[in-house]
Image 1 (cartoon, helix red, strand yellow):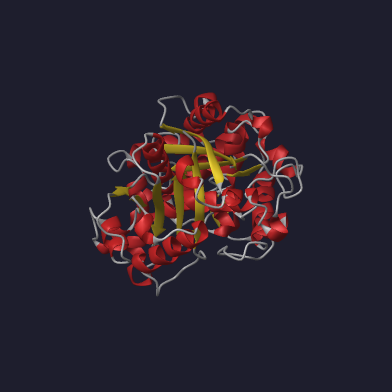
Image 2: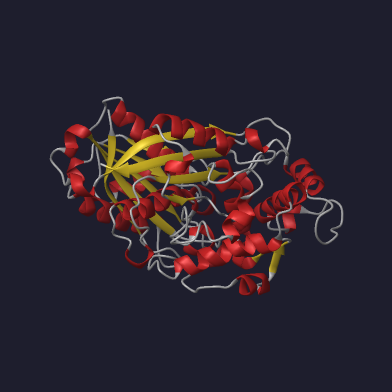
Length: 412
């Protein structure tokens, strides 16, 4: 049984100190239902993804019920999903599975995040710690310092992870290891960031909309070498929602604007050596998604990847098979992943420029790809796009993502 995205929407991303989780959810859900030409009373179940509200506001356990019943969605099953930065795509995965099982014909997956609380700055930073094993943070930190050693400026051994940008230090260590193994350069990461900042200038919903050159990216303040600020995702608020329907329901709707979920693959952390990248959890999720969809990497026309740092995009395009292992940097610098190139990646602007509202990110990625497959992306349209892939990672455990979801989409 095929499953389709009949409607999808997102809010503008940014720091919205005056917005609440409820108001962001209301905007995204209302717009997604309007896009599908369906009413709230036709939704049979909902999956609600959120990570930070429990930590920042004390709203635990029933976040979805609080946000969705407030806008009139009552009586139906509402499931709360928390899977780090992969929460949104995990909600879609579960909603997709429920329709395939024949339980429902119309469901909604919602991702909402409030990350910006200017009056709680320390708590905002400490909230990131929950995305890794809090009982192993010092040993994780020490291991990361070892795998990144020998490349770039000398750093003192150890360090206090409590006083630093933990996740960007994670990415920086992995980036240095990639440089050591494959000869990747800081300029390669800057090419990736510059491409995405330039793409985001074409996206009216992006948090940042200012084009950047490689040199401008390198000139921004250092966060954790080799990463500069323009190579790192910002703190973002936002929401996105997708209306999923069965084939039976699609017969009553506008099939021309529907997009099929052709296949999905999910994985979690693999016990492996840091250098054993051919066992990476994202690679496993991609293999599962491609197998379910019946495609090969060469069939893909447009991609959204989880570039919480620009190094991550270099790594993930390798994991997705868009280029050979170790060639992500040169492949990007060649222009192959730029709009108009061989396989455009993060035409939305990616997380580093479009924004990264944690639990909403996976559905925001799908919003971009649905827009592309509908041919409605305007100046950032990838011409002839027929097969689209989203890669959404979440958290960090040992040497890689804690969760990974890869989704393949095509026109209905």
